[in-house]
Amino acid sequence: MRIAIYGTGGVGGYFGGRLAQCGEEVVFVARGEHLKALRETGLVVESIKGDFTIKPAFATDRIIDIRAVDVVLIAVKAWQVPEAASSLQPLLGPETFVVPLENGVEAADQLISVIGKERVVGGLCKIISYISGPGKIKHAGAEPIVAFGELDHRKSERTEKLLQSFQRAGVTARIPENIQAAIWEKFLFIASVSGIGAATRAPIGILRSTPEIRELLQDAMREIYNVAIARGIDLQESVIEKTMGFVDQLPFEGTASMQRDIAEGKPSELESQNGAVVRFGKERNVPTPVHSFVYRFLLPAELKARGKVNW
Image (tube, rainbow, N blue to C red):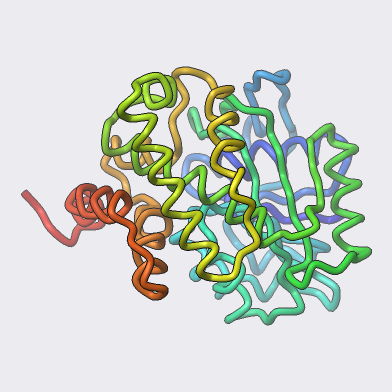
């Protein structure tokens, strides 16, 4: 397949790199020093599943220079999706489809509002990875997983073809029966861990091993479960126990990308994660006290990172 990776960070760099490694035609969209390094020295991935380098790596910051592709994997930050959607047109041929791999639950709708429902497939991923330097990606923890599926839950040739590409690349991939439920299950995990991790400034190992914080984490997950049910999402009540089991298997020192961004004073996905839980809760009259506190607690740092306040 001819695949565009829109956003060559920890997610796009790793999964795009694996696809390129197995022979897929991959073009990476990047910028700045990261783009320069990709062009000069290639994409260097250090991974717990084996290091590798893609050289040459076809990388550009000019979307207009890329002809239409079969699929676009959107791997920017959640708050950057609307901007990405508005610039996708040069990549779109008659059969091109787009798969968002962002944290949060709003990316598909944001893409649909710009490029149309027929082009958008629901998606998610699980991995602890980040840019460790220009042209370099560090996969530090978690089994890399991607999941995607048609938003109306039908089987399709295009998702099956993408599934086969990931499988050839040695990536654990699946097409869930209900992609919306799968996206919310991931959201239940990432928004809770991101928010509690950012507020406590502690790694996952501390969150799960400190009884009071473990209970808080479960309370945060319960709020998202309640919001999801109120919105008609088919989540099983066992999802909280299942998610805590996943948390217990992660590296002790692991942190979420939102937590790292806030710690580094960068704009983060606060609005798309904890902020979204609060908004959705208000819409459906579902109490979200944990996420409301976390959102408000972290908001000053977020506003400062975006240049809206200063001290």
